[in-house]
Image 1 (cartoon, protein in one colour):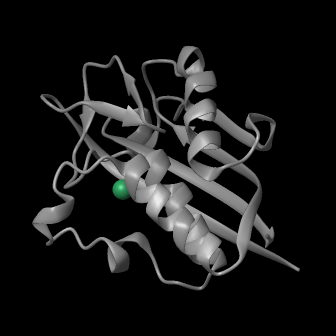
Image 2 (image 1 turned 135 degrees about the vertical axis):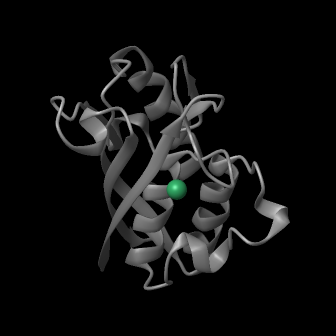
Image 3 (image 1 turned 120 degrees about the horizontal axis):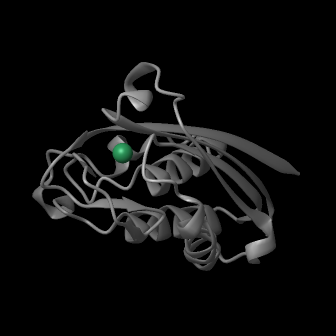
Length: 158
Ligand SMILES: [Zn+2]
């Protein structure tokens, strides 16, 4: 028995904010705006799990009106979503994610992102893929106005 889920997240980029992706602090002139730490990778993965569980989206579980989640560590939110999945009797088979960011190049950070996500999702790092793309100078990503992440996750009965 399998369940598949898709997640998508976009955050506006701004000066004076940190850029956190997959729990990894990325050195960047722009950071991501948001109520929590605005970790678009962690959010997209959490949304993919919630999608596989037919449990709505991250905003349902962690409303951005709730001060409890202000500047929240999104890996902690992801861990909470993972507990929900485990509680329902599911575990992760594999994750594939694409991060779209114009700069900086994310390749030096990808291994650490995979390690942190694998730890949070309780899977081997070999089951966690993070790919980095630019916007080729086009659209909001290409103009360094946004970071966008797509994620697909497969769950199976624990
Ligand atoms: Zn988000």
